[in-house]
Image (tube, rainbow, N blue to C red):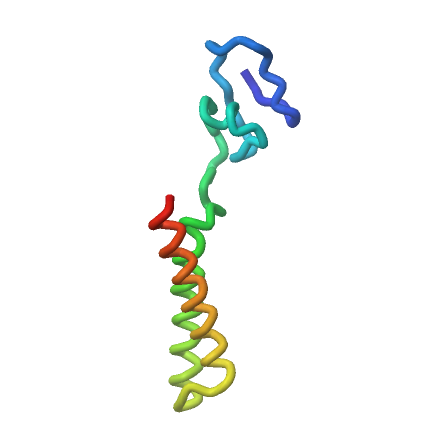
Length: 95
């Protein structure tokens, strides 16, 4: 059974629900859904923020090595890496 944009699946609890969009607006429907999106959790912050933190950390290191010391841009990249790393750790701890 294909999901529609409005997620109109009827009242039957035995119906297998499929979401082609990766997420569903209804929390009850999302619990019993089979998602066929190719990368359903690719944009999930729990998995995206560590990658962003690593990327910002590498940008800070590259900028610091290029300039010889931690100047404005390198400090900004490092701050972003710390913020995304802290939020990522918090999300992993609470998830």
